Image 1 (cartoon, helix red, strand yellow):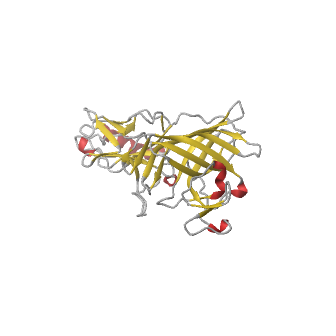
Image 2 (spheres, rainbow, N blue to C red):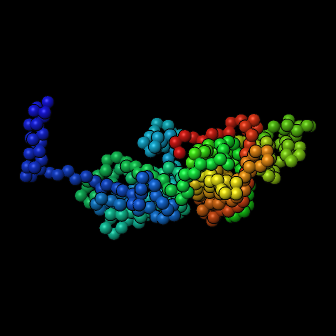
Image 3 (tube, rainbow, N blue to C red):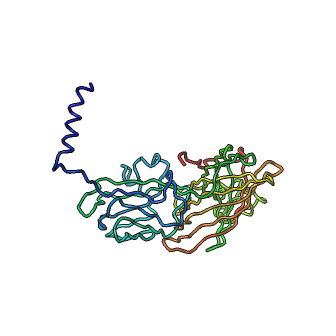
Length: 359
């Protein structure tokens, strides 16, 4: 076998070395500056793309998108690549020589070897993201990229999940956030947390919670415009009435259906403290509501949990976001307080969404 291959290999080598043979020269290759093992450190720093040789400015078209779990570690078809007309790209930023910039700004260096992207708001840490370099990227000599290129990355949100926890466990929780700025609002979330007790790492799905609409929970039954509240005492109330405390979780059910319903997923850590409490922190994540059209960029929940006498986990802390978009209009940073209460397994409402695998 070796004898048969040797003449062919020798001939190919001599042909490649012969004078006048053209050497293949491809289009510019693109790399992400500062990435290590798929992670960037600073979500607030500009993103810098480096070209292996000067790129033709008119061909530089770049998008930054959020990946979902179905994208199979960044190798599956994206929302505009599959055959499902209902799926689409979740675009956080784009730049195009013809249509301009969306979601921030991009600057191509004078020598055309680096593109610096400055987003309008920091990209979400903890989320799986991808930089898409659209096909058509070329150099001045016309060496063209024929397919879309994808660079998958995420941000290290600065907390290492590397300590076992004995004070926190997986389960369903009711989170109550009182947002004070830029506008006052109460956000109620039914939350499923899957915790790795060996490391303290968790993945959680947070879902909009609404009052149970069943009027027959009260006696006599409530009118068609009211709902039954059982806590702190039985009473017929407006569906919009605020919750008093996170312990009122039995009055709430999940609402994941748009336009008013929503659900989001993120990761985080719980860290046991010397005083018996447990520190809680999530990776920043975008929260998107379709109606009214509100987006909270880089929302983060931090707090401290402790075990009560009845074995329930009760937490307090804060919620923050880098920017609140009302439609497409920026309204500034958000901040507020948070309280949370674990829900016993036999009291978890039906159909609370579970965390998706792959994060």
